[in-house]
Length: 89
Length: 480
Image 1 (cartoon, rainbow over the protein chains, first blue to last red):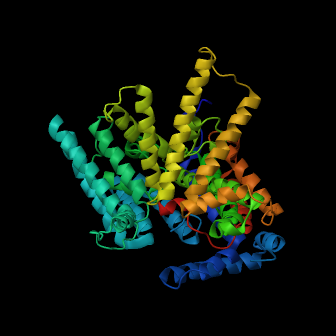
Image 2 (image 1 turned 180 degrees about the vertical axis):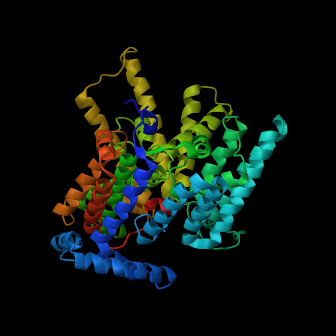
Image 3 (image 1 turned 90 degrees about the horizontal axis):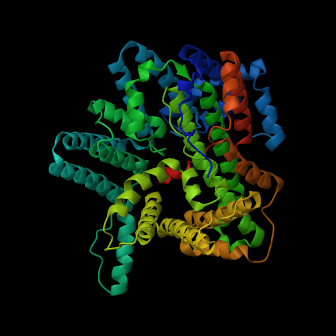
């Protein structure tokens, strides 16, 4: 049986990884880019939620995101991928 | 609140920022924030069961403290009381209906009325996971392996820590609490590992598992009589891949999220379908449950008299059998899960007997080894696991049996399309992302500038979201 002693080892002890500040910046950049790339899809998912407070909050947050995504052209990738795969969702 | 949803994305952004800001500012405020976030996460499923989680937390904490502070005979009584409490609640919420139906059938067969009242009880999400977690905590405190949590608040956070609350992995206090008490010392985060786990998990769940469920597995299991031959066989393979992608996907996302919050959790899967023996399979599949069953059930059973069994081999097989029957029942209150457990116990016992017999026939020499032999072993183990998974997925013995029986029927091919075949193959290959195989990718990712990291993860996520169907079905293990 293969040696599995490396499973669960904490790589941070080996000095792997990056500072929390840099991680936070990466996470915030991810949210920004993910929102811009997927604005229309996020709005679609938010609108599909059951009516209630969660639905309203999500739609309110997703609407400006979808607007910027569409008008900046950054939603292009997802639109084209979906069109190519499924003819749009 | 499912991980791959907009609601969770907003929740996690708030938790991530609050977690790191409060931790640097005031530790008590951080603890209260983390507990509130975890309870909020749980109450999104059904807020009424939050009371049950709090009850579990309070009772287990005080019983563990009582057990830790008392001498030996009363100590055992506290532990027994805690285990009885946990099993009683699990029994009421998860197994009452199952035992009621079984008792009703038996009473009906005997011609007597069933004495148990008919009550429909909703299953609190994650109850099997947090019950096992609580039991391991109590036993570890009793065995002196860990000290109780320093306060009720600390224990409540351990119990409710949201990444692993509803579907595991079952993180033990011995692993969690030392990290929890030294969390402020964390100054590095392995973002490469976290990002790979989260994206890999999302891909497995949202693309592979969802697609296979929709196009292959669900149609066949919903109507097994209508499919024959290759369709039935493909659905059995498809379910093996779906189950792995669904559950390991959830575990990976949970581990990745915990990593971003500064906690290092061990992997829960490690290329299970490449195991060359069943013993190895259980070192690779749902590792946190397998080790739990081994440490808290199998070893306890093995040390019991078990009806006077003196031979260690027989004692071993009986312990395996009971462990896996209960392990099967842990998954769900149905005879199909018991069957799944029974099959695995037979596989394990059969393998040990056969291995011993072959070694004896070879005059004590070890069994031959080589790439082709290992290939054959992998093939055999994988197919026998697929047989057990068919019962795991089926709603009855008859349904599981029918699907397996139909594999040998007329070889019709209706469900095999290029995307379905590709999903089965790619899903099978995703297991090679397990363990530490992607270390060069993690290290490469960690070296990128933060903006590029965010951009790259968002780009991959966009591909995953575009590939996956709209909406996300719940994870399979949520029902357990």
